[in-house]
Length: 242
Image 1: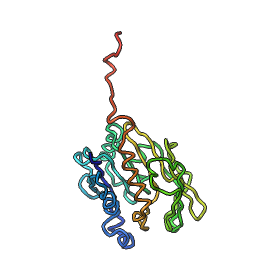
Image 2: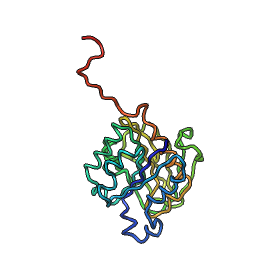
Image 3: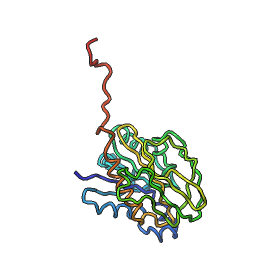
Image 4: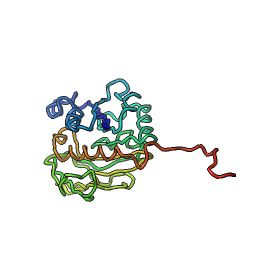
């Protein structure tokens, strides 16, 4: 059965910045979707902020197994009602969620993490070296022990997130900073995967290793934590005779 994947992108930088448009003329979401769409078992769709209901209608969400999220300049424009719907799909129905780069400050990531998700940052086109610290993890299948991105925005510790259930990669930057750059959590019936690279000004989403990590992440978070939907039993019906 095909994995139904929705790639969600703010799609504001690409419209408002000629620099970003030159890198992603049709949006970051289309680059990611085109790569993932090569997989025979993936069924791809995209959604963006300025579509009705941000492109995340009930029909779209109910037919999404894995939602990929990129946002940055307009986190506050995302309707709380949509955030709640996405949250319920993860917690109650086991929908997988992959949050990319500046999506760490998105309403949905903060809601699921229960923390500020704040971090240190510096935009200086630095070299980033991503190290596999759990190389046996399925998300790192086909990924070398480390790979480099010549230019990226620096994210540094402290990253205000709950301790990951699985810490998969660490980043080192030319300026000396380090960062927990790939991590997973089980949240309710679903899985959440955060992956750091992806600043809008750099061609990060054309990098083969970055795309492979996202592809592997889709397959990983598509498998809920041992259940397809949490069974909340009515406590009024006893299991044993009272």
